[in-house]
Image (cartoon, rainbow, N blue to C red):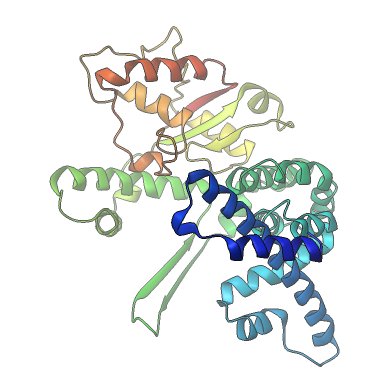
Length: 366
C-alpha cells in the first residue's frame, strides 16, 4: 500500500465498530487489519535494515534490541522481525508484497524458517524459486505455504546430499541434542530435545501408547497433564526403548524407486519430512504394510455395526489426515478418538473414494 492506501485503510478501521458488525462485515474488517499488519511488518523490515547500518557504524544497538526496547515487543517477535529483513534482502519481491498487503509477515517468517539452515549455495537455489514462491504466498494460507517452503528446502538439501557421500539421517542424528535448564522467573525445570525424525517418532509412539492407556482410566485429569504423566512414565519405565516402535512413512512410488522429484512425498505420517534414504532403510528392516485405501486388500468399511475404528481404518486415516477431519479442527491425529458411527458411514466412504486417487502409499515399520 502507498501512503494514501494506508490512510484510507486506517480511516475505514477507525470508522468501523466490530461490536455491531455481521459476519461478512467482520471478515472485511479483519482483511483491512491484515493489510495494516503487513504494512507495519514491512516498515519494521526497513527499520531493521537501517538499524543494522547504524550498528555497523557504531551508532545504534542491534535491530532486535531496538525493536524489543522501543517497540515494546517480545525478544522472539523482535528476532523474527530482524530475520524478515534478512530474507527480504535476498528476496526483495516479498518486501514489496508485504508492504502492499499481498502477503503476511507469517509468509515471510515461513521463508526465514525454511532457509535458516541452508548454506549459501543451497540458499541461492531456494532464492531462484522466488517468483513461484511469491505466487504461492499470494494464494495460500500461512500453514500451507510454510509446508511448501519446508518441502522445497528439504528437496534442495536432499538433492545436494544425493550428490555427496553424506547421509541426511546420519547428519540429523549427529545434530541431535539435549538441553536442560531452569527458568529463573518461574522455577520450572525445562528440557529441550532436538531429535532426528525417526527417533522422535519412536519416542512419541511409546508416549502416545501410554497416553491412550491413561485416558481410558482417568477421565478427570486435563489432557495436557495426562500427556506430561505419560511422558514421565514412558521415560521412567524404559518403554521408549523396550517396546517395538511403529513408524508410519508416506512415500510415493516414484520417489522410493527413483529418488526425489518435483512432487515428491516422503514424510512420516505426522507430516515430518524424512530423507528418501531413511524411508528405504525402514523398508529394508521393517514389516511393510502398503495401505491401499478401499482397494482389494483389507476392507476399510467394516459396516454400520462397528463404532470404533479398526487397525486398518486407523492406518488409512493416518495416511489421509494430519489432523482431525472435522472442518477447522487442528487436533493432531494421535490425539483424536477415531470412530465410524452409523451416521458417519457416508462421510467415511466419501473419504475413501477421494483417497483412491492419492499418489502415495503408506508404509508401517515395526
